[in-house]
Image 1 (spheres, helix red, strand yellow):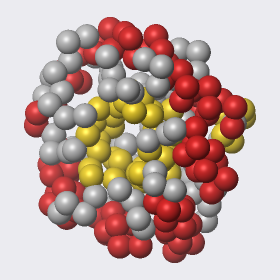
Image 2 (tube, rainbow, N blue to C red):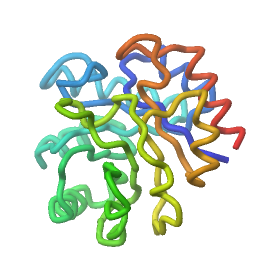
Image 3 (cartoon, rainbow, N blue to C red):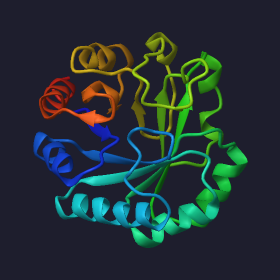
Length: 219
């Protein structure tokens, strides 16, 4: 059955909705430019992250914290004060930087890397990334400031025959209406959604979350 991650959550009520609907993962964004950034900044944001990840853990649902080109110090702070099960790198981190993150994390959490699929070449050297999981996402919009959560799809045909030796998520423009087609087209073992379950920008919709998870898990 397809795993589902609901990303960009900001409050405990929606975490509960996602858990009760059958989500496997919830994601929290630590990136000030995003409308889905956790509330607060600096220590306040870390306190909020600790609260949200702890709440998810109490419900038995795994959590990831999304960061964009973070400093090693910030990654360590997140691991020190939260109950996050994984760190999701969603910026321009190089393979060398990712290796350093992995050494610093040292098994305390999973390490994921989001790759923006512009061409099949993006997927040519997956074995060289020192991560636990991949997330295949659409490239950011032209002149856009957000690396993800833009509601844009990429050409799923580029994933045909992809040989990933680790688990991976399909992301980018997924909705309750297209997630079944996306999974059937790509054989994705897991899907990630953010804007596709929002009633308005940055605000999750309970009915859309239920509809998305029901559709994804029917494949």
